[in-house]
Image 1 (cartoon, rainbow over the protein chains, first blue to last red):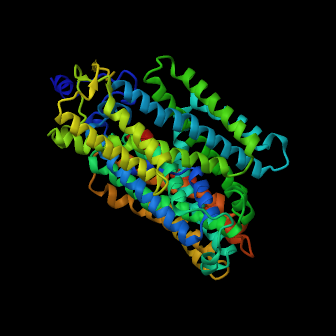
Image 2: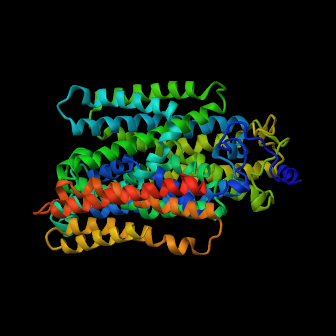
Image 3: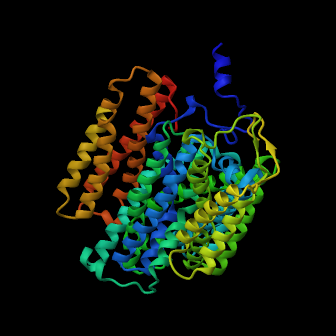
Length: 456
Length: 122
């Protein structure tokens, strides 16, 4: 009897594991602290310290703090709005994307966000940063050349992602408080070498940049995470829990980590964070931990990317992980050999992500909060699928809104903050088009797809 | 858990004692000590009203992870050149205390997972 009741409440079959295509059942939901800790685990990676370092190279301390706060506030708003979607629907971002983009759209945009941006882009960048750390530790060794170390580091990460992801997941856990502390150590070294806090405030950067460029870089650094918050918040017991967890980690801990490493770079004027920390006396033990944390974080990038590719490439996941990882290693090696420890490729990568991803988040938010409200769908019933439910193959309004929002916000508009422009344009274009066309009786959706009990 | 709380208190005292010689060293000792202290002391109110053994185990695992990871951070940082003191006796003592904290909290996690079937990763 109890099984029948459960079947009525949760009529799904979790065929792919981890509830990747179906809603998370009630008994698997987690507390606020669990959700918060998982978000922190994602935030705690060496790339955040590098992000802070790039800010320190471009801004005075006052402006660096301003850039960190405004960029993080934008991310807090984006993630604070996308996280409750996962909490209410109980499904991952790619499943939620079926509503504003259609079934094919969720595969395409899910692949852009998780597969290309995280699985290949971030994987390559972090493998390259790994190469820089190894080179900083062993500057004269041939095997520690930035390009060489990026390649063998990336290959090792692929191997662990394929065979040992679950076994290594807990290692990320160990690294979270460590990363928090090392950002504080960076700030301490910065204050010490910069002649105290007052001295640090008076230092001007060698290569100053406009504020909006820095803000776009901060947003670009974590915008992919801000859009896919539902992947974690779907496990939250209360919908608000995921949003709170996201906002606190971004506003408090990201600002702290960015500012800490910015202070370090501003004071030392070094080319990279690893070099500045080592020269400042943070110790080799610190770096070994950083390498371990980096390694496991990058495993996650590859793993999540492979999951998104797997929604439309139906082969064994380890083959996808292998190919995706090899592409990432190739890019990491190329950047490592051509740019070495220069921060330029990292800044360009962050700026690009800050331009191309926000519009996707804007459309998702607009569809869930405004369009579904306009259609008089009760808040707690939005994005609730069930077996046998029919959804569109393509929601063309969502596609056009993302295309226009990205192009105008990222490349046509020469003022404002590119990341924010894209987000707002995607949001506004979708609402205007969807509501006007809907009122005019024009169909927003093309084709039809029936969801089965596996959520496919 | 009580031993872990006492270890945290000793690290706090060591930090306060060496504040005048190197305030950064004093500060990092205080941060590590206070987080470990809170991790240890918070367990008691968090499990006081719980009756489900597995849930008690989950809470214990959560807080012991915090103590363990901050202990590893302490081990990595206390011996770093930036936090060096004139006499290295204090950093060595703090390092050994962190090693003990890491071992004890690791043991606590193992026991909680084994005996209460708690989740290894929250």
